[in-house]
Length: 242
Image 1 (tube, rainbow, N blue to C red):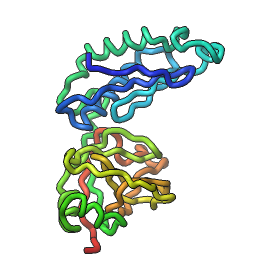
Image 2: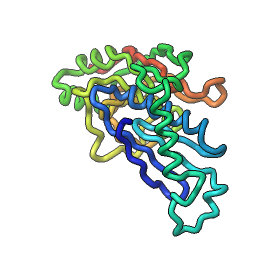
Image 3: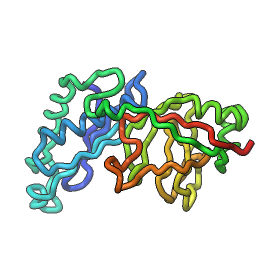
Image 4: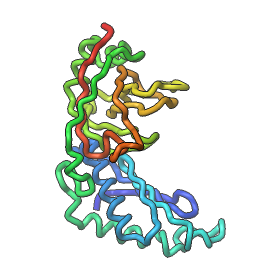
């Protein structure tokens, strides 16, 4: 079984955190978390919520049985979210056929394995800083960014905010030391080895490359999030300041 930690996360929750697997892409590790969340959601008592991340799954009780525990009670006393039950289900999950697939894991619906092109005006505030960090010029940054076919690994932070994997580890970029109070909707940004498009104006500390008019989240659409897990994404140059 791959190494993971099972950490208490409040009176009715656990955080499952897997170690970084050598040779695994960010997407493959996130796909395992997606699969694990789906497995636990299907096999734990009704009402348990599972929230996957890059290498984690938060398992949250529904507040029925576990809510009756006193504040000082240990989580292991709850039959709903006991450590032994979680470990047993995780062991069963690891034995399942979903584990070990090269890229797309079972929970990532293959119908989402589509390619979405996102046109970008490359005029971001951090474009020249990224060029320095990548030891190239602005044209080189644009060429690199548009050469990658990203894949949505998971969503979080804000509705429609998809964490896009695909940047080589050697291109990883630091977050800003002082995050911006507000980043505009449509901002295209990178941080660590992830890329994202801000679906709405929010604070943010990622390096800004440019902007797009594409709507990332619309609750009136049949599928509100434009880039659900599994979606492939390619950025195209719509314009730039050089």
